[in-house]
Image (cartoon, rainbow, N blue to C red; front, side, top):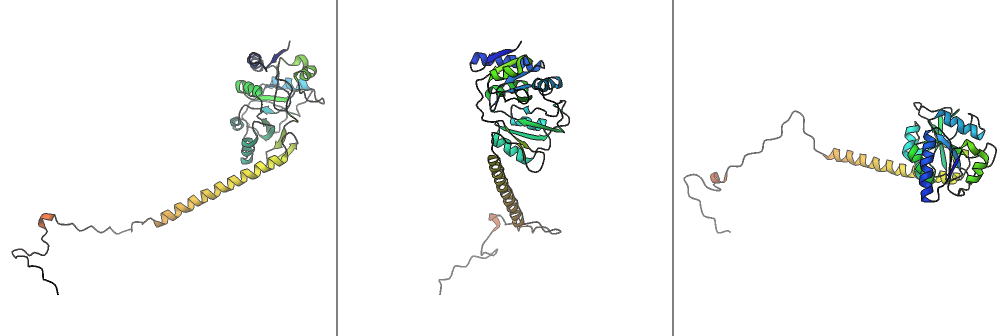
Length: 274
């Protein structure tokens, strides 16, 4: 039987997160809030649980679910050959409504479906989702609805469509997002839009242009520093090969110096001038 927790109250949030974490670790399904719509998810590294997510939605393996992560640092653990522009976009828009499709690490023991060696990753801007992800790690999460039906914006809509297939429902009130996340294909030299969403392409292009300006400024600073080092090195005297530096002449001690006096003679007095 499914459990529903009202996560808008502190006690409900604590109980709901604990129940959801136990369910995820046990290979069961959870409905959780995100910054866009409600999602249905499971442990990304449990192939049977991921298959159950797809079955609950009535979706095939040809449409693998995205993976939600708790922090930007998780990207390097899941992806390989991450372009610099992806790091710039992640820094600008995560947590938020941006999903990036990147090449997945071949060593990961997971089965998300027919991914063609890629993985779609997003960090949601929702405190409940981030708290759960921080506890259990990456989750395979897709919209909490039957394929072909509208995405669930309330926990009641999710329950109506998914019912007992889900073990734990985390209620955080109506979803506040206006659209699903924007999806970018980031496996090439430039990002390609796969799905228009909450994040407009103009904002993405502005972030990319700003990142390029910053990178160019850093390159100029590095080049100037290198040039300064070269100039400094060129002014530093270098020892001449095969020659020794002249030995400084020793100065006689004060006791032996007799300015203007010859041994055995008196010193002549100064003249009176012209």
